[in-house]
Image 1 (cartoon, helix red, strand yellow):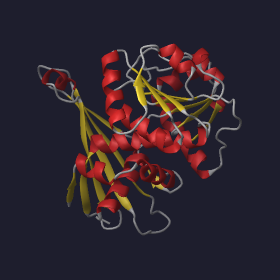
Image 2: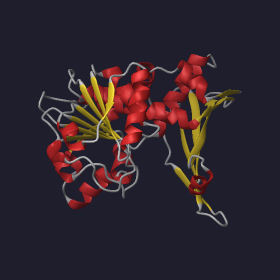
Image 3: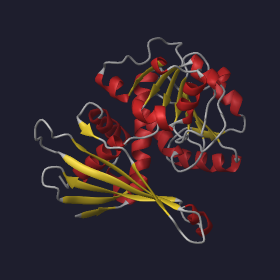
Amino acid sequence: MRVVTAADLAQVFTYPAVIEALRTAFVTPVVTPVRHHHPVERAGEPNAMLLLMPAWSDLSTSVGDGAVLGVKIVSVIPGNAGRALPSVVGAYVLFDGITGAPLAVMDGAVLTLWRTASASALAAGYLARKDAGTLLMVGSGALAPHLVKAHCAVRPIRDVMIWNRRLEKAETLAAELVAEGVPARATADLEPAARNADVISCATLSAEPIIRGEWLRPGAHLDLVGGFTPGMRETDDTAIRRASVFVDTLAGATKEAGDITQPLASGALGRDAIHGDLFGLCAGSVPGRTHADEITLFKSVGTAIEDLAAARLAAELIGLR
């Protein structure tokens, strides 16, 4: 069994390859049980949480080559903030889907960053204008550079604006991206940047809307990644009403994402007004963007399908399969 480090993944992954692996995964039979949540009591500090996200190739009708089984194991340790350590850490364990033999243990954090950004880029390939040249990145955390580079892999982005509540963090990320050849710059003015962006990608932990629907220009695509609980929100009801709304999975987004659950509860969004998910987009059963001035919105909450697809690709690229 191979230990696959963050450096190993960064060496073999490319955004086009991960995007295509996800596209294939969303049209391939995969079993994804409900995510397991296990509270962990800890004396003297906040309770922790152990999350298990399994998925495997569906072999119920036939046994196929390349079948895999995997589980992402994530620990959420709030007390790590006081230790100057990440609060969320984890690993991905990949098994042969036929024999059950363990193939690899992979860095779960980096695997998640790559697959999450690639899922947004996969959606943008169907939903953003083909000539989209301006990207606004809202947030400058660990996921932000991956989102920027993944979007640049599917659209001819010529100008990347980065906004963060702390301008110095946006400036640091912009400098790092410029060093990698990405045309990035920090901005302190969110509204003008949003009004001029063809694609807006948000990766924050905000509980209140940051992007206002009235700011969205005709033809804009809004990519919402950060809000992963019903109490979190990155955009407002105006954006929901103006946009054609898509999600990564209907089952996940309609239960976990505040940008979807809150409008559903208030009546600002009807369940039948959600145009589709990545299953339908990738299969071609759901149309993506239909005209140049259409405003589109994609809400991502993540799915174990994406983890399995990325882990399987890594195993193939490294030569484990």
